[in-house]
Image 1 (tube, rainbow over the protein chains, first blue to last red):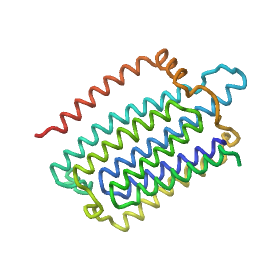
Image 2 (image 1 turned 180 degrees about the vertical axis):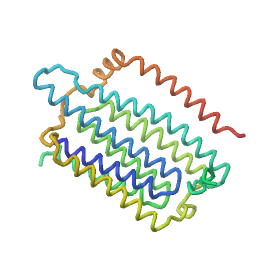
Image 3 (image 1 turned 120 degrees about the horizontal axis):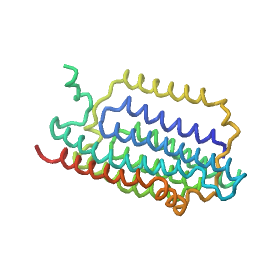
Image 4 (image 1 turned 90 degrees about the horizontal axis):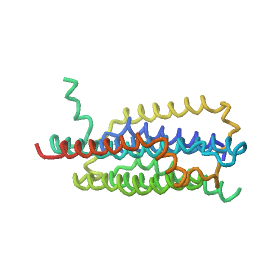
Length: 111
Length: 166
C-alpha cells in the first residue's frame, strides 16, 4: 500500500477529531474525540514503521528497523489509559459539582 | 484489486464513516458505540500491516477497557439525546470549517513530498510480532517501561483522590 493513503487516512481521522473537539459541548464527547486523534497518530506511526522496514529489509533480511515506532505506539496507549482514568474522574467530579457536562459552564476563569 | 486492497478500502471507509458518526450523533451512548467501531477498523488496519501485537492490544485496551469506562460514566450520569446541550449553529459551522481547513492544508502540504513513491510493507514482515517487540522493549526500552508503571500508580492515586467525595 502506498504510504500516502495512510497519511491521508490519518489526516482525515485527525481532522474529524479536531472538528468534534471544536463543535461538541458535551465534555465526554470532547474527550472521546481526543482519543480519536490519538488513534489517528498511532495508525500513522505503524504505517511509517512498516515503510522504513520495507526500505531496510531489501538490504538486510533480518533487520528490526521500525520496531521502535511500534513500541512508541505501545507507550502512547499506556499514557492514554492513564489519561483516561484521571480525565474521567475530573468529569465525574465536574458533574457532581455543577450537575452538567456542558463545557460552557466551565467559564469561571473568565470572570 | 487484490483482497488486501479490498480490505484496505473497506476498513478505511468504515473508519471514516464511524468517526463522522462519533461527532455527529446526538446520543452519547451511540457516540461511544461508533467509536468502538473506529477502533475495530484501526485494529483491522494493524492486522493488514502485520502489527499483530498492537492490533490485539488496541482491541483489549481501547475497545475493551477504555470504552467500557466511558460507557459506565455516561450511564452513571444518565445522559441521553434530550440531556445533550443545545449547540450554536454558528459555532458548528466555524468548527467544521476550521477542521476542514486544517485537513486541506496538511493534505496540500504532504501531497507532493518525496514519500509519494514509498510503500508500506503489508501482508508480511515480522517486526510487529510479539517476539521482536518484546526483545526490543526489554533490551533497549526497559527504563521507560518501568517508569510507565510509576505513571500508572500516580494516575490510579490521582483518580481515587479526585473521584472521592469532598
